[in-house]
Length: 128
Image (cartoon, rainbow, N blue to C red; front, side, top):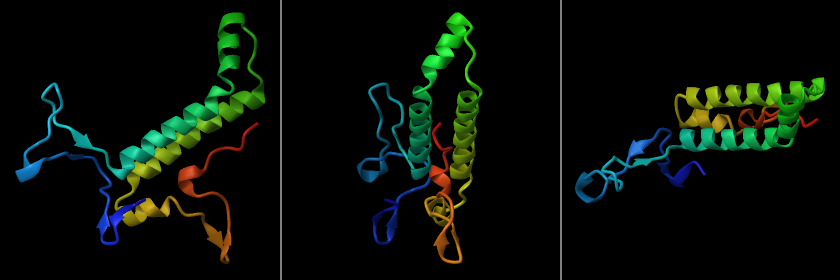
């Protein structure tokens, strides 16, 4: 998932799409088309995951706004944890200086050879 082939890594950052003879590929509005890099794809996945995790309790937020019903503390804490995790994961993705650092975000940490915790790119709070 990090390489096109054995010695051909996917780019970390977005890059302009080009056609034959290095001519820029343009969209219907004449804008340069960009090819998404691994970082952009990973950040998009983080945003989708956070949205999915929050969606189960969105009704409580709407109810609180419409009716003034308090959001339970454990739910609010979980929602805050999801947002914090999303920010932390996105910062780690964007801070990866090279492919090796990006790949490291996908590895479960170990202690004495045993898995310990979650891989940094999937370190979401446990559901309530």
